[in-house]
Length: 178
Image 1 (tube, helix red, strand yellow):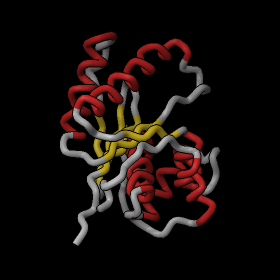
Image 2 (image 1 turned 120 degrees about the vertical axis):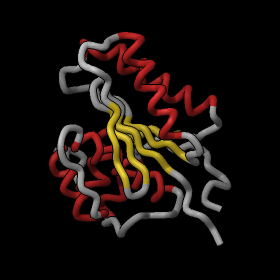
Image 3 (image 1 turned 90 degrees about the vertical axis):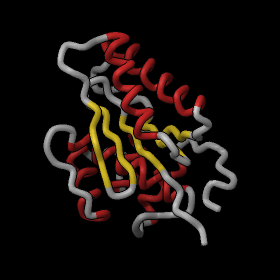
């Protein structure tokens, strides 16, 4: 009998990182005013606790809009540090563009954060409320995409939505779903 792979979804942010595993979500929120290396170290340390023992980590890729130019360097650094943490632990990781995440959740690549959250509630029965609700919903979408990619979909996903899997960078994962 096969075992469902342990997949973790990460919606990386400098202020509120969303984390999800099958049936749960969480956020990582550095203290207000913490910047630079201490903030990056805090986030990566907490992420490594969540990814311990994972078979696959699915990370949201960069968004090239939204006025984040002033935070670009730290956020890009965070993405590299998280990928490196996965690599050091021998955990394969995937990178999913934001439009593919929205397409998988809502059926359109321009789906809003609220639409993604509503889709997660409707399709998977997972409530994402309060501060970090959109980050949690995004992370849960990434988790669902990873399990679907490995052959373990959490729910029936419409054909149009499944196209979100095609635009993502998946690692070679031979043996993960066996």
